[in-house]
Length: 595
Image (tube, rainbow, N blue to C red; front, side):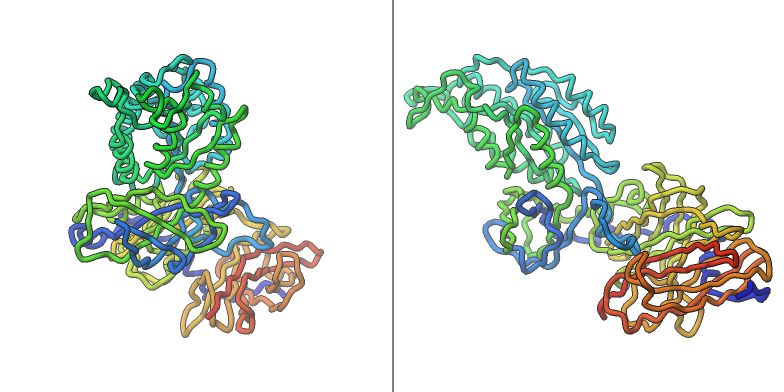
């Protein structure tokens, strides 16, 4: 086959045309927030026996009780808080989706400073090292010391600063603590924690609170029954207030205690009414009350301590949001008892014992956030599912650009759409759609060769929003004097070929990529192959048609038969081989979904 001189009109021209679009401001953000009512949403964690989050749940598997009454679960979605672990898949991902976006986790490392005596600090520091080993670029952590130290370090992604803040902690407790002393410090701690959590009420995403404590007192009068309550009286109400504030802050609590906490109170003993009729001096009793009030998971701090927080990191990697049917007279703005159960063997649910639905008229996270904010810090999806993929194209001057394809999973009237290109968290390119109603949705950003993260965000007219991400390798594939651009897939229906990220009932998929350089009349062979694996045998091979589209640009296209394929992932390989035997290829994964 020879490189011809004829000009051709191919669908890759759509992508090139998109490069000429200037950057546009964001479109309107949908109806006013006052016209939308909050949707009752219950979030919870569901994990397997080893602490791994469940991959998926159906609404029929979930039972939600509010105020003791079963509520109908309308839908459920899984939110990935940490990046999906690298898979040993035989094929690259065909595209990025909203479900695979790591929205990041917010960890609060909270130290009950008066419970630890000097010398116990290494227990905490070793445990934190276990958590920081699992930290991702999207995660944030803060260090707080209560009741007197306050926030030692505000939220940051810098693991070194978090470690330094924990290393600066010094225990303020005593090894000769009486029951009254323990009750007084427990009350101080609970009152300070109540104020701390109040500052985070109404969060749009869960807060993972890791409490380090060497013991708490349980409720006690701190005086004989015949006398008035003592100075260190500790009421059940002190714990109940934490139930309310933890629910409002969407706090998922883990309590880490020294393995020998039961031995830390010297000489405590029990009667049926506690010790000397004053109350229990058992430091485990308050921890148990606290765990019951917050739905906390208790973990032990051992000599190394890292295993406990590794479990926290694993369990917090994903959570579920169940949307329940709203009631005509929904009680909002007030704490209500909550219960969540999953009807599946071997699954453990982590849920707070109370929930506070947003007050009527309050805006949801989706209506408050603009597209630009979603691009900077992706929030959990609120129902708008997206697919996106990036590809490399070259301009006449040789500059590379990242082309962007976006597909709403379901038909949706988008009001705003944008994308950013991230290099290790730094934004190196931006694009906003001039008209989000256009189909196909195509955009582009300039970029140097390298590996980037593409993040796309959109909002529809109903106020739903979604964020999708994909990894993009920016660069051309060299084949002797030639360079190959990215392979793209699309469909043709009575007009120009349009890009497509997922296929179902289509009989063929149009594969296309650019060839740059070379001379007219240069000998080569060009074929597109369909296979199950990157290196597997071809299920089908189709010659590529070459059409010159510029002085040094040729477009290669072929129609790949996919109508008879079973649903699943396949690889499409565009292979170029020169007369001297030099060969190169570009590939893309094709996903066929059930009809």
